[in-house]
Image 1 (cartoon, rainbow, N blue to C red):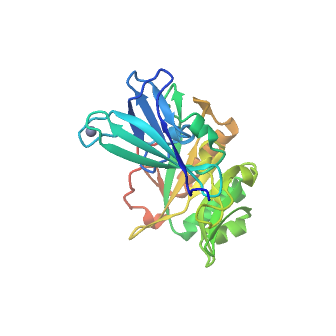
Image 2 (image 1 turned 135 degrees about the vertical axis):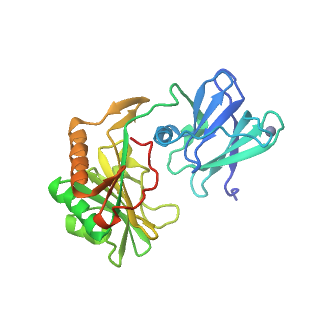
Image 3 (image 1 turned 90 degrees about the horizontal axis):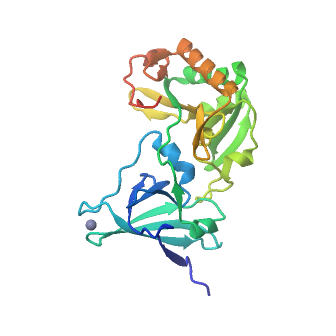
Length: 308
Ligand SMILES: [Zn+2]
């Protein structure tokens, strides 16, 4: 009988045989960068997709050992899925070059095929820091404020709405008309949306979905922050701010990273964004980057500053 979850290890060295690194890794374990003694930067496994998105808000600090040293030798442990030949997890093992203390960082791999992650565990990165134009707005909205925004996006701007939502303990993603969108967004008894993506032309659902059934077997999962690379505007599900009301985030960017460079989205999309912000300013009470409904007018907004 085959051993369950067999693992393989790989010592990490660069093409120039450098074997000591500093490491920056994001808190949710999705993207990281190694820096060699000679100052070269390397993406950790598949971090390239997410690294640039992450650093638009903040660059994670270099990891430090309890002894204050920040240099490590690095070994990757590849953990296979039970029923497939793919890897489901890469565990980064760090060993302090001063005191020998070990640290580990697990990285979940959520797609296949994954052979490349073993063949090429790190990838040289010429420009670890590139900034692009990221825009974010918030709204403290009551139901009427939410409805007004959704109707504007669908009926006035004529955008297509893709809704990712829960129903009876399962996640679904589908294009919906305005009436259905309003029903889901206002949380009728059955549905509870996770996010809504607005776009000028429908994109095949298969391009937006990462898995048709997530690791928890509770239905489909969308690709992470898909609106960043595509011409889409995302409305997040609301955060309930006790005593203040519901807080919504509108996420979009008019630039994106294309093969390591900043590229502009289309003029049409940029015009659409401009039109939307003008409308938000005319129809809600503006406070910082917040556009709020009347009675939430005086609410102090949580910081989202620094995003422009
Ligand atoms: Zn140490």
